[in-house]
Length: 113
Image 1 (tube, rainbow, N blue to C red):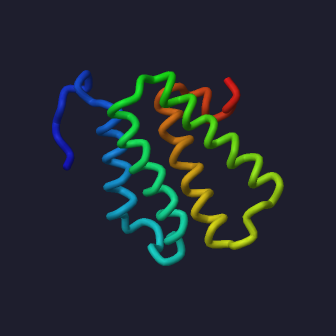
Image 2: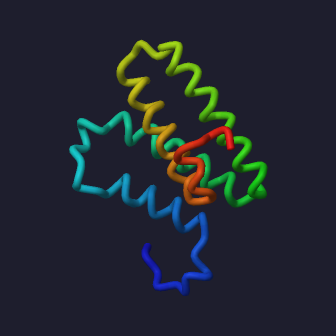
Image 3: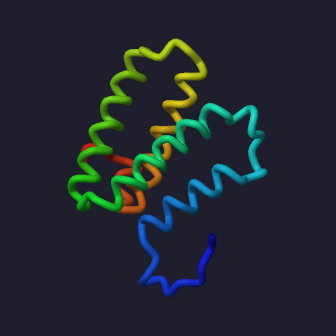
C-alpha cells in the first residue's frame, strides 16, 4: 500500500486511500466502540475517492461543502435521534472535513469560506 513516491507524485487519491486503509486496519481505537463512526468515515472516503478522480477542485469542494452545511443544519435541529445514525453521520462529516482541510486549511475553521 505505502509506496515511496516522490512527494510531487503524491495525490489526493493517495491521501484518501491511506485514510481508508487506516480506518480499516487501525488498532488504536476500539473497533466496536467506533463502529458507526468508522462506517460513516468509510462511506464518505469511498465517495470522495470516486469524485476526486473525475471532478475538478471547485466541483469537489462545492459538492462536499454543501453536504457539510446540510449536515450542520440537521445536527443543529437535532434531526438525528438514533445514536448510531448520529455517530455514523458524525464520522461522515469528520472525514469530509479532513479531506477538505487538505485542499485548504481554512475549511477546518470556516466552511463558508
